[in-house]
Image (tube, rainbow, N blue to C red; front, side, top):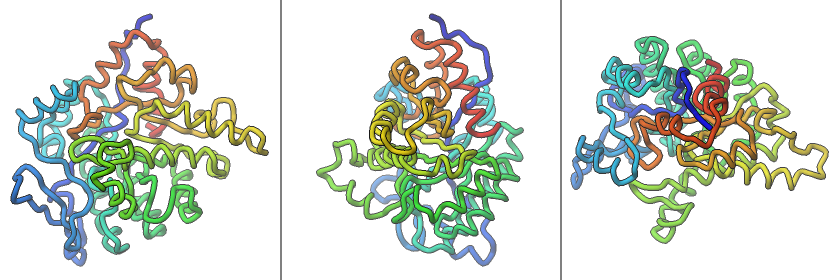
Length: 372
């Protein structure tokens, strides 16, 4: 079996690293909400975003080229990216690097919003709008090759819908959600107006690994949980974000949402894909004798997409769930074990998947998911 293929590559999970420029799009009266970039006195490579007097969200350390090389060797991946490219201070450099990697289009996701960034709706509205306007500027300068997933204020659904419209007009191809938003799961009826409008705008709901419940995040920061799947290890695994993402997919399959919003697409990003057959099997078994059993090809019927890793057991997954739901990404800009700018080269070197399945993973499926 061969996987030789010539096709445009769509990077379905690339990132941007927020900078001070991100907040230059705040309205004058919103300047009081501007996040401050604070550098740790004990580690000048580590910055934190301070919002409302508290450290909020997430920011990777600013690693030197040597440190990135060492981290790449440690994890067996290539996470080296120019700082000006990952922070989008130099868009031409980003596009040039994409050319070198053979990537035609990147879909950009945020970094900061992996956790809740504020408890105040007015602050969330302002920061989301500024971030989205920043991405609109990037899209306009990116020759159509840099698309993005909008962040919207989940504490203010009417404002979220308004920002969705503006984002759609400026290159956005999806709406970011955390699997848990405050005390609400993604299946909460509170979000139904958002889903209805996203469906009308042909914008998928993209559940990127994250956790918007501060208490839950604090629970898994306990040192006793640091080495288990649900825990948190600085600079390492983010189980506290991955596990809720997997659970949210199970909740979606078990809910009425796919039939209530039949045209809405869903993505579960950066949590690997080997869990997907298990989740589908578990849900199918529980719903087998209900009035609404799962359809045969549930991912295709329900519009569900999941990112895979280059070392996932793809033959097994493809056999169990089909080839219409997997996408891939580089996690460009991040510096953790899931980041690999060589991800697509590695996928195309695999001999255990067909050229048809490979084409779907690197082009057809992300094209369908993001409506490109």
